[in-house]
Length: 311
Ligand SMILES: [Zn+2]
Image (cartoon, rainbow, N blue to C red; front, side, top):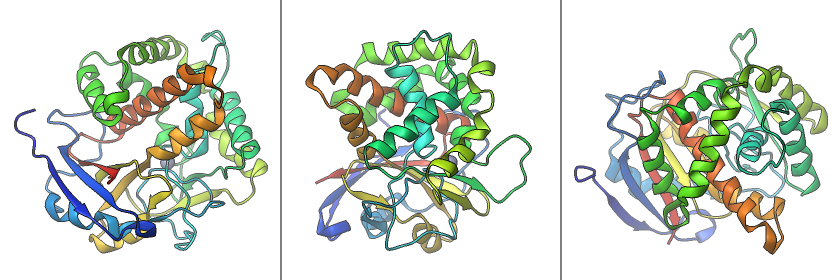
């Protein structure tokens, strides 16, 4: 990776007065990924992004509904009460649970059943689930790329031509926590599940109706087109990206914001006992692996990639 530019600057005065450090890892990839979304020709200036990103991070509101990483405009967003962002919102965690943790036979179960279990867990643990549609017409899809594209996400995760790129990015996000055995285990589970993905994902569009029933007003409707130009993985607990404000200040260029701290917190809450250590680690591996595969399915790899760390 000799050609990639790594810049790190300290900036203070971010969310809650906490000090964060943003690290630029250049572009997601030098290869061409299968997704259609591209940031080629978009130059936000990596140096200034690194220096100014904290202006768009705010403390999360404890009861605010979980948001997706989707960078599109949410007209219903309450700027004073933002919830954390994870791929696919609360239902998005369900597949990570299935691939990383579930002890069931992989030839059984459905995404809808897994997502229902995850939404119930959120409610039991006092977390506010959330998900979204968009305002376009869809026949079968719900309008959330992290849920509609799950077939393609699994395809990307097990694609032999993408696996080295995939592993590189998962490793750069998990850093010292990366575990090759967990990685290969989740990859293998994905391969088995992919062989019956028609059955597993059948009826997945119903999950948002179910979410709405179990947690009224938890569904957002996003507007406009995808114009994400960067991906930020945020590791500063209790903070999240003001996605509307970021796009408004960058000429419509949007950010995929993933609050990985929330996935770690969820893992601690789902698997709280000392004997659950492996489940926690595997859940986080699966969640990060599916996030990278989602970006592979949605983008061509040309987006800027930043990690926001506690200073
Ligand atoms: Zn989404």
